Length: 336
Ligand SMILES: O=C[C@H](O)COP(=O)(O)O
Image (cartoon, rainbow, N blue to C red):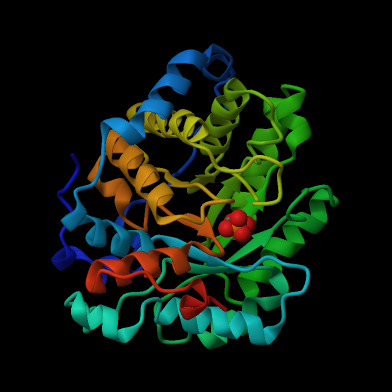
């Protein structure tokens, strides 16, 4: 049973992205020996991921606190070809007020300034989001480098990052070149990630591995390590556009690499599962795994984000159930 999150601890200053709470990952030279030595015990990973939901649960009373904490970690996302300024503005309004006031009131959260962790959009909408979120403390994250496939020329990727930073993005979600992983060209992956990190400047960079594209958990582990060696502030599973997106086995492998990297370098790297996470019960499993593998600090938005476009609606429904004992229809909790 996991129960040590209290509603009293949610919101306020811990609710902001809090990037300056931990020193940035300062990177290290590419250590090819370490990369090649990485092994993954496939059956061990699958067993541990499969049994986690049964072994660990959050007590009913504590669930509301865990779900409120999850909201503070959501990168509230819209990444559709038909996005418009109006949709992004609606999303930003939701990020600033993610839960209905009557529910917040009933939960004793009315004055806590609860917000999502960030809003995540394409470059075209960075300025719109920055303007809509002004004064809220909520950072704007821009997907970049030819998201989602990452197959545009390298110099255009750097220009896209620079343009989003100029427009006010405080976080840049880059996609790696999957071919570098599939061909074992770790030097090329390291070099591109170094360039991305440099182009970001003070903006924090999340490295999207597109784990559904890179075939094996060993590749996931090695790509995680190389991106961290090259200075990624976060490692992120997916764009949401691959055939398979965030999963618990992939999460376990990435968290173990974050732990190994911290043990070797002292730097704390964040984790962002993304794609297909739309149910409150699923997010609890990710939170439990974060806490078990990396400890309590990794439940906070400076080290944990959840990339999701529709999760918030289900969390709000669960909170309503917690308060009233009834479920309402999804359309009463529309996002965007
Ligand atoms: O990074 C975020 C993902 O693109 C969102 O995916 P989703 O629409 O499946 O929640």
